[in-house]
Length: 264
Image (tube, rainbow, N blue to C red; front, side, top):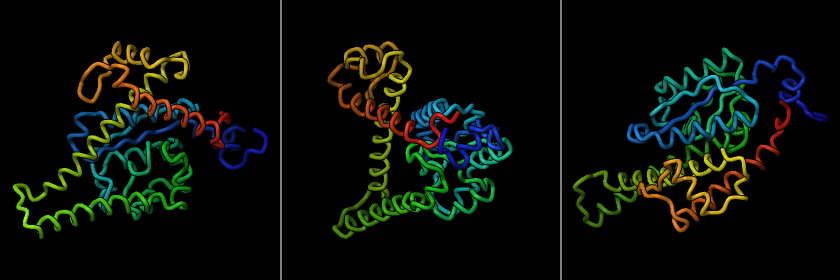
């Protein structure tokens, strides 16, 4: 605890920040189909619970939204985000999200968030491993909005080029649908990797002590399937297991390097 400053020192000392040893989670997907599948939502929720557990925070509740994070109206239209911020403010708790893009893809939303939840040092992103205050300073919120705008721009430009080439679309939004389809596939693949990481995280033995074959058998026993709903073999598992191990290794580094690590 020597040399600790700011909120970490305050909490560790049992002062005003003591009540903040709790967390409210927030997860979001963009489309109803993603929400119905629940893959991304469950992966985000698992990440939040694991992170909070490592930090020693009790999770009061986790709120879900199925809504875009883009545009100036996305904030007021996401009722569960509003409820999450209000509850965390009332309970003096942290708000934890998997990444800043889940919270917002529109930079102007920052002012709305601060209005309901002024202490943005208690808004935490797992993936970026920083607070909302730091993210705003580093431009990560603006970058999330810029990435979304660039995807939209490329989609429209691609449609325009194909139209100029005389391509007729049975569905005028076919290219945009293809882009969204590719994003959904990527998101599903990422969710499966997170599922594998969750299973490894729950084992008594460190993941490095488990062979690929042992992990495949473990996943099959637990009913975790591939993206094609097949049982795991070592060939199918190897590339995703490598990514899952990387997630766990990165988490360990992130937790041990966090200024709050060990304070509780």
